[in-house]
Length: 169
Image 1 (cartoon, rainbow, N blue to C red):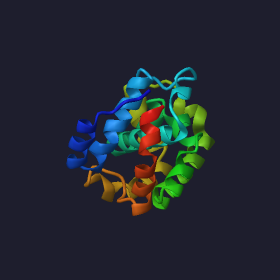
Image 2 (tube, helix red, strand yellow):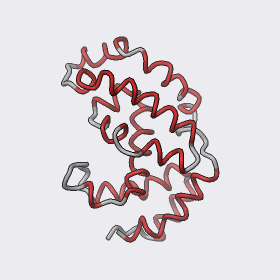
Image 3 (spheres, rainbow, N blue to C red):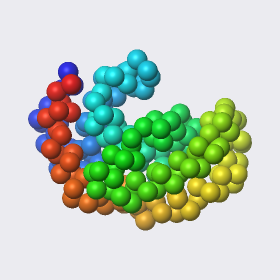
Image 4 (cartoon, rainbow, N blue to C red):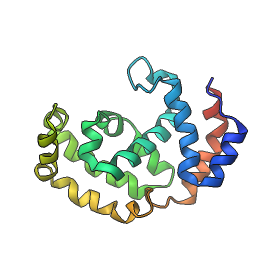
């Protein structure tokens, strides 16, 4: 069972939403041993995976864009799971549309995007996959806030209503 102390929740809540989410996602990563494999995936609920995917997406895209997200092995986890649908249901339609648009590029070039690369080849990906630029441009306003778009209250209401289930499994 994933357990998160009340003290950790209170402290994180005082630091902001990203810190609050990180308390949960750190617990999920601890539960899975930091690995997202066929063996560890069943250890989390769908809602837990959605919140973890949000954090991974946010961290990877804000730091290095879609090429980094994919090269770090998260392409299938983000694009071939119901992450975009969960974001739409949680009231973050703008993010959901962005993920669906990026998935089209990912699916069209998956084999090449996921292949092992040298550092120079990795850096060249940013020129080779300029299709991601427009999508990453939409995140520029978010990057100054070090967070993804301000979510609609329904996202946080959805998260809040699921907290007991997230702590129980």
